[in-house]
Structures are given as C-alpha cells and as structure tokens.
Length: 229
Image 1 (tube, rainbow, N blue to C red):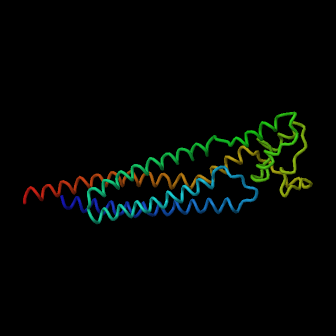
Image 2 (cartoon, helix red, strand yellow; image 1 turned 90 degrees about the vertical axis):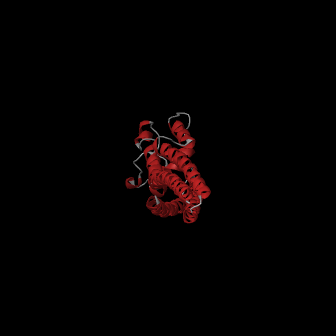
Image 3 (tube, one colour; image 1 turned 30 degrees about the vertical axis):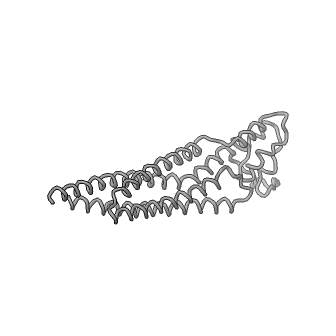
C-alpha cells in the first residue's frame, strides 16, 4: 500500500512539473500574440488582445495551481489534494471552452465588418468600399475570392489591392482573396494555442485522476494503520 502511495506521489509530481511548463507555454503564447499584433501594420483587432490577456492570466493560474498541488502533495493533506483535484477539473472545463471557441473561429467564422465589406463589394450602388479596403491593406489581399472580383464587376482596382498602394506595377497586385487570407491568418494565430490546449487538457485530466487515486490511497493507508494500532 505504501509503495502504491509513493508511486502515485512520484507520478503526480511529474504531472505537476509538466503542468507548470504548459502554463509557461500559455504565457509565452499570450505574449507572442500581443507582440505579433503590435508588429503588424494596419492590423484590425478581432479580440486578439483580449485573447492574449486571457491566455497570460490562465497561464499564471495554471502555474499557481501546480504550486498548490505540489504543496498539497508534500503535506499529504487530503483536503488540499481534494481541492486541487476540483481545481484541475474546473480549469479543464475552462480550457475546453476556450479551445472550442478558438477552434470554431479558426474554421468558418468571419467578422461582421468583413462580411459587410463583401456585401458592399457586390452592391452596384456602392462604389467606394472603405470597409473592405482596410482588410485588403492589412492582409495583402484583393476582393472576396481574388482580384478578378473587381474585373467581373467592371470596377477599377482600388489602391488597397496593391503593395504600398502602387498599382502602376502589375507585380504589386494582391491576387489572393480576403476570405481565404483571413482564415489563414486566424488558423496561423490559433495553431499554437490548440496544441498547448490539448496538452493542458490531457495533463489536467491525468492530474485530477492521479490526485483522486492518491487521496484514496492515503485514506486506505491511514485506516490500515489505525486498525493495526
């Protein structure tokens, strides 16, 4: 019985270390996301700043939770260990919700402002599409599907469809459409978060299960000691 308890302690200790490292990765991701937004010219914020702040805060909570779990492990306090298991389950749910939102956004979701720009593009009475031009300059794209959208609509290519707004050189023209470019942008930004999230969810699940087994093992060991004494 003591051997089982000691083995579970070692396993949970390793899980806590991995959990703390995942928290550090989450803080790194939030910081990287903030820096990447600051470096972009003409960037349009679609909640990236809020997401990065939430990731940093969650990473800090994860590190504090791993420290709390380590303290509970050293003291072998059943109440602290049970609280740690409940905390891991709560963080698992939060992490899963954040992952689901991020995954949905990286698939099909388009911001309302970009949808409005596409609607204005096909509106024959709307000649100046300021909404879409913001995305064209930011993402280096042109039209919804490609630059051919303007040609099919018999419209003059806007300066926002060209690099440095210089359309005198045909090589400056952005050929890709803004819809695919925006989806690529979101997928690129969320790829690291999805990987870290899966590691966190897996670690939190394993940690909560190991903690519950450890609490049960400690209780059985103490009951056995009382019985024989």
